[in-house]
Length: 428
Length: 86
Image (cartoon, rainbow over all chains, first blue to last red; front, side, top):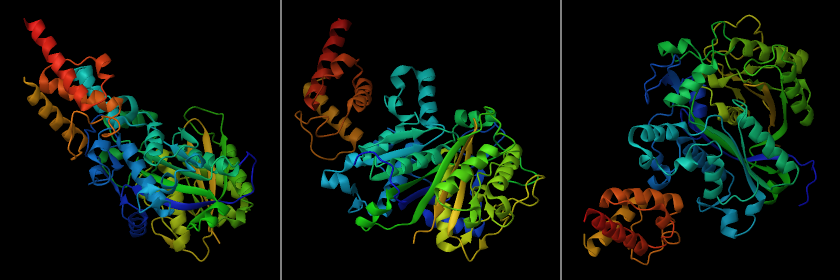
């Protein structure tokens, strides 16, 4: 296919999730509806050097249950998450023959029309820190040769593409908490431009190691009240908000043009109707307080989706719980949705399990799709009293059943002024 | 160390390292039969260095294709060690 922008709908045909609650969408959804938090005191390393001592950490996870020990020792935890989530997404999309080998590998052709986009923020610091300790303590012969391939953010793209024989487009996006959104946007663009027929796309993050946690701590994004080990420290839009709590996991999707998905009789889970990204051009750390460029991302995503603000049934906010970001996000939503902002629910379910940074938007997108299936909006936990300047309907504390939940706006933003928005729609 | 001992020791190391239970022979190809790539060869070589108390030169390791080549690499390294000790 020559490159030309098509008007095809982009659809989601597979989804794979690893959240701090466990593996798969069911446990994520059930725990969210039960209002159960996955934020717990960090136990895998000494946290005395940081204040944010809680996180959405996946407990009792044994990678050897999913991958061979030979594979596990060559890769970091963030690649492990991505490999498992990718496999689940491909399986969900009916693209694995006998649950194992992708269709294109089995057929021996078409692999150059399959691409991968990955969002990540940190890279594989658990692996890197262990090997750096070996270097300083025992010398270079004790450093795993896989240090060369395991730790850097694009390692995931390499590992997944090798595992599943993906030979088309490959890209990795680093844009702080918007990394996953940027990956999804690029994957959708590639499909619309005819550069690929199938895109495996998502995000992954494994932020729990001493150095990685320290980097986050010094970023100024993290909740300081988490020093007490409180599971309620992540409080988007609440009067006592003071930063986020991070989490680990991954979410991956299979995206296709609708006609491609229909031709192979694939299950269609949702339509990715719109997407856009803008930049603040304001500060390396702070978001632009006026929210105008953030609002522009939302508006452009709505325009691409051929939607008006009144068509939006729910906004899944970035909800960082950093006071300046909560206020400017509220402002941006008001600018983008205008009068509709007075009635559209704006939820941040990730307050229950943490912010997955590079995987934050993919997990939000998964939740939005599950919410549309169930017509239930998961709640923003730990929102007791809205902060001054935060005056939207944030779906506090308890989930909300709604009659119509067909179109969702998903927001993302990252340090450095990255703004992104996705519109996800029920497929019919 | 006699050649049979080195051979059986290396076979056991490779099996433990790869998790592959199939029978191995000196002709077993590291890449084609065991999917041992260049990085994994380095990892395996470090285990062999510790097991046999020898130093294996990366330049020679790069040219190993089979388990037999690994065996010869260790045998030569042991001989070099003896020469140095003498």
